Image 1 (cartoon, one colour):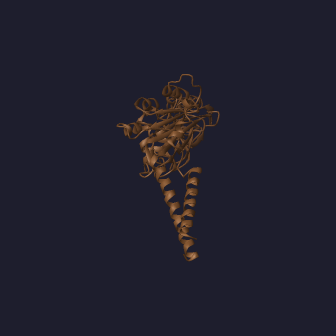
Image 2: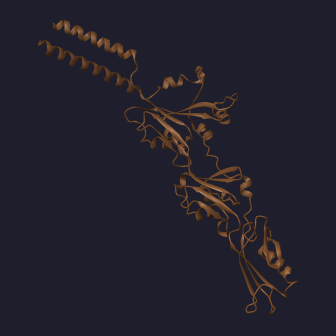
Length: 381
């Protein structure tokens, strides 16, 4: 091929490559800032685009609403002196006669161990009969037995002992050192003490959540709140089911960052700055610090406050925009609270696409030159 013809062929090939580049999109991490703004309600989209400032961060700065209801917190501690069904009692009876009703002549003493309070709350004592024990204190039961026996043996002396539990139990499951069913006893009548009885939690305290199922009603609290807010350390009830598990909330980070991932919450609350730090921060070669977006479905009351639109009904899609280059940009991002199911997206800087275009063009030129060299080698010219 003559040099002039080869140059013409190279020019045609380069022109074809450039046409191909303009006809198809270059690779990128996601939508551009202009494409996101094009989806705003102001431009007939379905999401509000809200620049983040201090007023916005104050509106959305809410902690996860966990905590026991007033009904749970007002429940009184079970009285350890009151006998309940399924309690196990021990009875000792002394008789002041030579021919005792219950004991032999050598001791005049009778010891009745493992006397079980039945489901209806009764116990049976020889010669005293069936006695209502539940709802009474050991002292009250002692007086009842004494009254019934003194008609048959003079001046009986009766002692009542509780052998185990309060007749009430709870079950503890999940991330504790020793799952199981535990009796409610004097040292373990509160939630925190019962968890300690099970060996404590087996996960990080910062992400531990405690769920107490009482009947058909479950309520949750953060593990740390049991100590920071003593009112949350509720009294337990028979049949309570206690579940200890790690926080299941998460958010997703995409775009021009050092890593893209679905991230679990490491603490009760996390800011936008902390969220970015968890994946290594912004990409130093691709990210646009003016284009950090947080996509979220806001509940009606918050959506109305941040948008100023009082006609919003139900959940509303909101896209928050963080500009880290502003004088207070990092402070604003530090105060912006990320929530469950948020999507944090960082756009690419404008020069990134330019670099990709230049790279594609120079790559095309290099390929064209290589092709020309190969053609010359084959032709021997």
